[in-house]
Image (cartoon, rainbow, N blue to C red; front, side):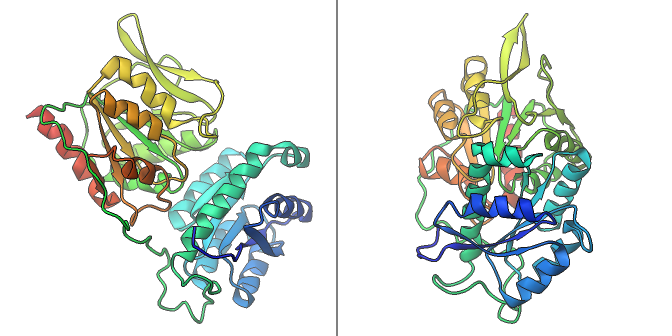
Length: 373
């Protein structure tokens, strides 16, 4: 986070005054966050943003007069660089709209509890919302001097709509690559910014002979839709994993929201096991259980790809993969929405490569092709 005592400034946009009040009280429990605007629809949000710019907007989808999807591009045009979190109830329609919003420039999403009592009682929801606001508030502030106000539309003419994060400030220690490394499985972990990153990665990746597993921090409903979207941009088959699925070369399986995805051997075959064990790193699905489960089965033949996301999920699992002889590559800071997960493995010296997202497909392809040569 930027070195400033100023709190992250937030606007809440929801047609329910009750929900806005509950969200405001949840966020302002953290002294590093200040809710400075609270409005009932997208038009009011645009008018408010013109008067007072903010760091982060929590934007509801379904609202009268102007809904969240219509307001999104107008808010980004009013204040380039503002970070927008889409908020919606967990329906397939809203999940589809949220993924569309991410493609249009929203930074993240959060499922709203379905009842006021759930918001009051859900520590998980409160922590997730607070963490996302703080992480994305830091992203917004990287594009302006410490201590200054968020850029108004007039002052932000030359500010890019999605400001790039700074380059890594220290030289990373990369692990040498074993010439005998031959991956038999590819495991991917991602979180904030992950849906966009995964789409770009797979659109540039040719068909692989290895099975590919993805743990993306997402709620149920979202993961099935993400799989459908990725299936359209890759020559491989992509779908949400189900209990007992066999690992098949060239097939991509995504961990379903709310369940850890692991792999076990059964009757001589490697199969998916979905588990309801407690969250790890505050996440379920979590990257670490997936990676741990692969080590007894694949040993040194694991290729791990850590993409954009907040937190450090996947770091402990990657450390164990490296100890077993596997290889980890991570997205670089400049191309990440939040350099938390990839930054954790990179700064711990676990990576053999830290590369821009645009180069990741080529790096993975070369690692696979060199092993097949």
